[in-house]
Image 1 (tube, one colour):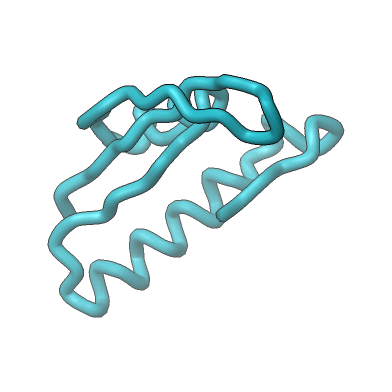
Image 2 (spheres, rainbow, N blue to C red):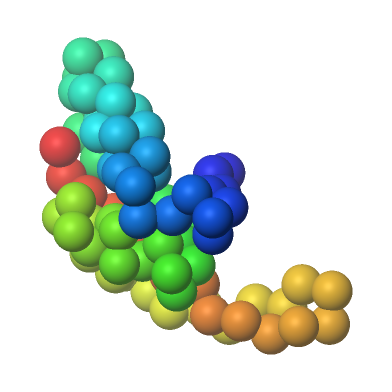
Length: 74
């Protein structure tokens, strides 16, 4: 799970972390990475080549929101 505070968004922090995680996964011969992304995070993952597998509606603390199951072949 990752979250970037809005005051620090759009500075490349999440991209750097995701890039490093993918590099580590490749070094361990991981073939596929799967994530569950919020609507905001979905855009980041799409820029990195992830594809939406499924949209889900989920409820947390009486609030409904969309999340996206996504994956990427390494």
